[in-house]
Structures are given as structure tokens and as C-alpha cells.
Image 1: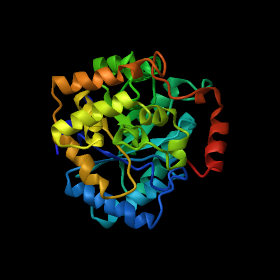
Image 2: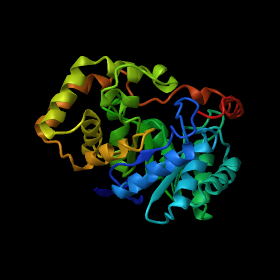
Image 3: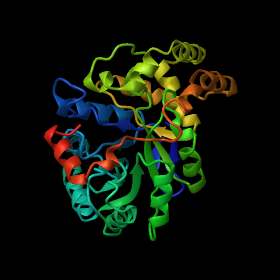
Length: 330
């Protein structure tokens, strides 16, 4: 396993992390003993040198954090891992520190990286959110803070607001099938030293070769559908994978690493950990990158001229909170 610094100011992390959205989420339908399953995933990850784990308060409405926290505690894991979580974008400035405290209780540790999950509603100022995140770090509630799903303009606004402590990262959707960040956002992040954490790096399994959706999360995802039916991209992945004696998933993850990102694939079976970890050993050459770029370049502009998470900012924070709470999280 290789390790990198997250941006210019963040912690050192394994070049591949693991995302725990699936754990407890009603959208993924992880069956069986969740507690045992998550513990097995964490244990296998540590065996293969993966030391970066990501979750969020809305994943199963705290269930994912609780399961990850129990697993780390049961395995006696301490500072050797970096744990990231996220506070919902619906949180007002006064609610952010309390939300971070609750995250720490569920994780049974001080969160290493707390992220603002999406930009605030239009009625809430960016600066008030950044101040609250800075205060959370200053008070020792988190070791560092980052953002998530901020586009280029939103990121610039956030950076203008920071006074004492700057964000170390921006977690965004990024994969061979979703390259919108390359139009504007990635350039801003690279220039300002903001680390890129890539969620859905396998397009919910489509870039691993899955052609038909099996969960609610996949059935509702336009990127999954596009990637699953993209014969040109699937063929390119297969050719590069064959040259390296690797799987499609490993190639898709290795591409993100080559682009300077830290992918955090999710999983529901511990057996996938070894496959994901193996991607860190794949070094794509210029021919590989050119072939993958040619097959996926259309995805830089297909989803818009700039990275865009959703229209959620037009919804008042209270309504966002009620809706997500009513669903039992996402």
C-alpha cells in the first residue's frame, strides 16, 4: 500500500480508502449481520494497509458511524487510522459543533476529518458555516475539516471565508464515468492545495463490470446506467485490465490515483477489500491513460459545465433535515 498527504495540509492516508455508506443505509440493502460484516471489512482493510475510512451522519442516520466505531473499538484500533465523517449540509452554524460531538460519540473517538456534506442553503452564509467548522477544529472536536460536493464557485467562496484554518479536502463524485470536476473544479483544488477524495469511484459498481442494478442506489443513478451501457468504456477498461493482469475495478481506481485523487469505494463483502487494495500497486502508463481518456472524455461535459451535486441548496435546511430523518437517512 502507498500513502499520500491529503492536499497540502491534511493527514497522510492510504492512496485507497473505504467508504461506509453501504453500512446501515436503506438504499443499499446490506444483508446479514451488519456489525460482524463491518468489523470483518475493517480487519481485512488493516491487513492490506488501508487506513482511511469515510462515513457520514446521514448514512443510516448515524448507523454507519456506530458500526464503524464499534469495529475500530473491538479491534483496538487507534491513531494508526484516519477516520472521516460528514455533517449534513442542512446544519446551521450553531448546530455544527453539536453534530460533530455526536459524531465523536458514535465513532467512539475524535474524528480526524469532519466534512461539510454539501453546500448550505441559499439562506445560510458560507462564512458562518466555515467559522463553525474552524471552531470545531479549534475546540478539539475534530483534527481537521474539509468540504464535500462544493463546486468551483462554492469552494472559492469557502476559501475566502476561512481565516484561521483552511479546509484540507473536498470530497466529490469523481470517476471515469463522471469527470465534471475536470472542467473547472479540479483546477481550483490543485491550485489551492485542496485534496480530492473521490466518492462513487466505481460508478456504484458499473466500472467494476456490473451491467444491471441490484440495489435502490444503483437503480436511481444515471451515472451507473451510462457507465454500465457504455461499450467503448467497458472495452477500454477490459483491455487495460488484461495488460496489467488486473480487474476493471482495479484499473478504474488506479486511474483516480493517477489523477491525484484518493478513491473511497464502498463494499458489502469483505472479500472485495483485497481487490481494492491491489489497485495501489497498478501504475498506469501513458498509453493506458490515453486509452482510458479517449473512452471517457465525453464525461467531462456530459453532466454539466461545472461540478454540481444537486439543487438541494434551494431547499431550506429544516425541510432537508425533516426529509432525510423521515427516510431513516440515506
